[in-house]
Image (cartoon, rainbow, N blue to C red; front, side, top):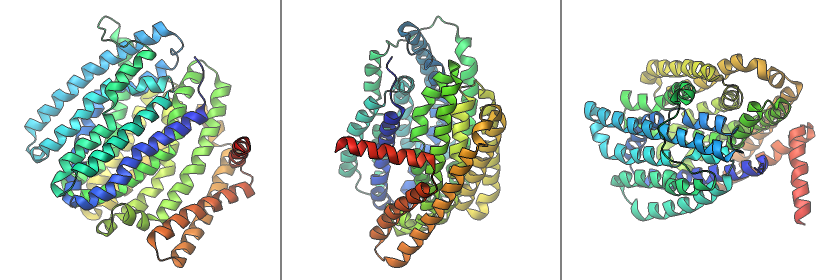
Length: 487
């Protein structure tokens, strides 16, 4: 199979991430004004409940399939057999997820007032399963996924502005969100035939797959707890208004995190393949580049968002959500720990088949997050939820590094990474100065924000070049070559 360019895949996945994010970025300012804060709270609480059952349906299949399938993708017969077995397991777990969901809806009276919204979001469970997204990641086929995303995002925007018109329309907003996220998955299943013919199979050795899948499933449960427990505990201990306020800061946090991680996601199949085939020299080279580039992106993103938190909240949601500024600024401190922990888990520990270590780190972080939420939310409300996220991400990074240091110690304590970290910190000081000056010089919210971002990027890039950061210099030289070719 022709090896796809990581740069091109990163660009395509970045575009795809932008498109997936653009839908809530464009729609959230609209719906946060059209819907009430209470409606936004119901929408997010219902989504958080369904996310747990999405987790049951998914098990640890996506991560496991990418890791093992990446080693088989050049063998048509083996990948067909493997994909069919994984899909069969996924179908059974999907049925189990729906069974548990319906039982919970019957037992817990608290959920009855959210019933319709939860049922709408539950459509994601089935459509995610038949979408076989993991197969496209195995083959690094981001061109098809990106084109598909463009079409369905455009259709979703048209539906949104035509059907969501008042405070009572949060049900319609939920349905359009589901359509935007997984509406194309039927096409995915049909299109997957160009790689292999997936079908239900029953006679195979289930134990080969179920062992690592179950371990990864429990790791995903722990991850889901510390990702969603903030909204869930806020909803149970406080009210829909507080959930609505925190939803703004957490949504902005996730948007930036997804953008930063676009290059990481497309690198995972390549690293899994290289590690699986024991091509450790190539594996380390990519891991070094990935770690340095993500630090160069994460630190300025967190700094810029901290400085522009007020402007971002006003632009996205309006003045009635200004209370979310503090929780958003607290969340900014989580980025660097989150990205580094993500590298260690998905790019190091899982390719090395140390999923039990990932389970331990995620479980520790989840317990820490829930305990802090339960203790502090009664006093600090949404700020406690943000603070618990920072500590959970930090815990995840520390524990992951402990289990992965024999593989990555030479990468994480290298002079190259230290130089990248120091040069990025100095560059971030430049971003702070630019944002302060723009805030003092301009009154217009839009002009102030745009100039702060543009000038911060220029200042940050210039500082990295002056400090001779080799990754920044390489990116500049690459840009010059592309520009020269075009001219």
